[in-house]
Amino acid sequence: GGGTATMSSEMFNMVKALVGVGVLGLPAGIAAFGDAPSASIPAAILIATIGAIAGYNFSLLGRLCAMTGATSYRSAWEKSVGESTAWIPGSSCVIKTFFAILAYSMVLGDTFSALFKTIGMSVSREKALCGLTLTVLLPLCLLKNLSSLAPFSLAGIAAMLYMAVAMAIRFFDGSYASADSGLAMDLAESLRPTIGTKGASAVFSSNAFILICMLSTAYMAHFNAPKFYLELENNTIARWNTVVATSFSISILFFIGIAVMGFATFGGASNGFILNNYSTKDTLMGISRAAVAFALIFT
Image 1 (cartoon, rainbow, N blue to C red):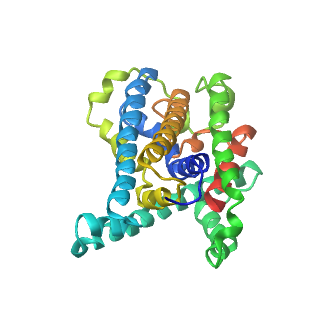
Image 2 (image 1 turned 90 degrees about the vertical axis):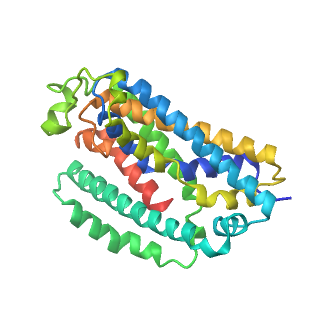
Image 3 (image 1 turned 135 degrees about the horizontal axis):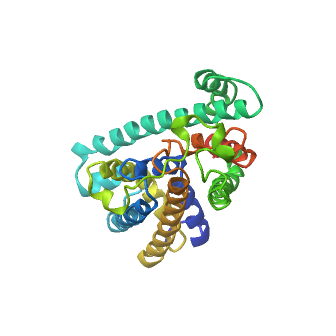
């Protein structure tokens, strides 16, 4: 039974659904409780643990569809919990989407404001966002068929991978190793690397819940689980679990890589949008900003 999607294509699309720009806030989640490199260790454990729990729940939704014949997130609730409360998952999806759009708007505003600075123009995030909304986002929203954007999906994943590699390069080449030298000199004082003494043990402070709260929504793609399950060719539970386990494992590794690279570079000064920590004169990271903006808009 099932659809026509191969396991490899399902994995690709699932990773794409899981890995979003929210990952760029994780270094700040680590910085909320620590500022020494060893704080990355418990953070990585938390990222992996919560990711595994999210993956298990994602798998359960597919199994639920197999057992009940449900074809959507809402119908899965109706068949397993009851029709009288089916408004709960629908409302949750609307609220989650609202805040996701709000977060994406903040990221786009910051990204394009920084991109304009790269070419010597001073444009506020508000003006950048308004201009982008009127010239790009609104026309895209008015499209009756989004199939024309399908070819950009692969490019979106490539953009996120480029950003991860660029962050790793900047960590290992030491461009931001000191707050008083290199590219770090171009940054505001609050964005310069700050390496302190609060390491792995700091995870036991209450501030660690900031990272945990971030991670509670980092893997949020569960409302699409029924769709993924139904589209999988020969969708046996064994094949479904393989797809989910592989996709979540790849996503977990990606999340850990971005979180650790960003935090290891800037420590306690890690910004809520880590690309803000990089100099607007840094060409490599300037391309990363453009890549992230592309991934946000077209994928």
